[in-house]
Each structure stands twice: as C-alpha cells, then as structure tokens.
Image 1 (cartoon, helix red, strand yellow):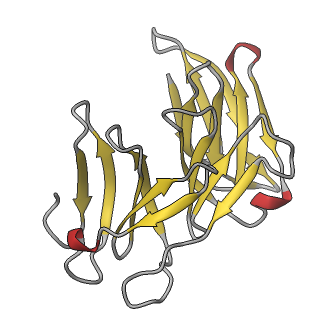
Image 2 (cartoon, rainbow, N blue to C red; image 1 turned 120 degrees about the horizontal axis):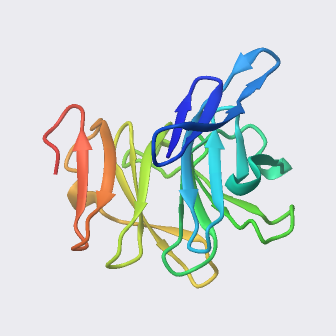
Length: 195
C-alpha cells in the first residue's frame, strides 16, 4: 500500500506495517505525489507537485527522477498508461496533455499537446482529470470550464473531437471523470448536475 503525505511517500505491507519512507523534500520544501501509475509490465511512475516525474523501484526502495528539458516548468497532475500502447498520458496543471514514453530518448520522451480552445476561442487555463475510454480509445479531460475529448491519431498525437453537444453552456467546472467496466464515462461537477 502506498500513502502520500506532504514531504513523504510511504510504503506499507499488507499488515499495515511501514516498510519504507521516501523523502520528498528539496531545499527544505516538502512535496507530494500528485498521481501514480503501475504499467502493465510492473513499472511504477509518479508525478510530483515539484514539476517532475519519477520511476519507483519498490523492491530496491529506490526512486529516480526522470529529467527532461521538454517537461521543464510543467506540473504533471495525473498519469495513466495507454490502453493499446506502452506509452503514458500525463495531464499537466496548465500545459495540456503530455505523451510520456519512458523508453524513448530524452529528446522525445515527453511530447506536449497544448491546452484546447474553448468555444469562444480563448485557451483553457487548467485541466483537472483525464481518462481513456474503453470504447473509442479517446482521451477525455475535465477542466475548470468544460469537458474535452481527443482522438489518438495514427502518428500518436492528439486531435480534439467536437463534443460541444455535451457542453451546453460555458463555465461548467467539472471535476473527476472515470470509465466504468461497461464503457460508460462518469463525470462529477461542482456547479451543475454530474452526468
């Protein structure tokens, strides 16, 4: 079991006994884990609010930061592995969606896709949660203002899908989004009914 608290990432065994504590403190500043993902092959990747991605090796009690100029200044907030491919999709606080391929060279490990345009033409400011649906394979993301969907192209880039019929008005602060076992998407919201 893994628990993130300010300044520490804790590993417990199945009996609830603390096995190891990873320090998340740099320059006397405590950080926290924003999200984590275990790949289909057992690798664990963490996103931290210190604007970095880390590899976690639980058996060795080792955590390594993955550094790249392409991630510079971005704060990754969520991560999951693509349903068909070995790469991952990371959501960033204010820089859109990033494709992360840990097996690629440092220059191409992180590929950023900018924030989408909202219906009036200005750019979204903050993306909150994202998920890949099991029906079409689209990436869905909630924001402070709307819901967005992206198709993955044959070149492994993202292309926004028009779902304006699902967003009848502006300024709908949506929250978490999940894909259930039946292929349905569930979206929670702050200022409108969830759907």
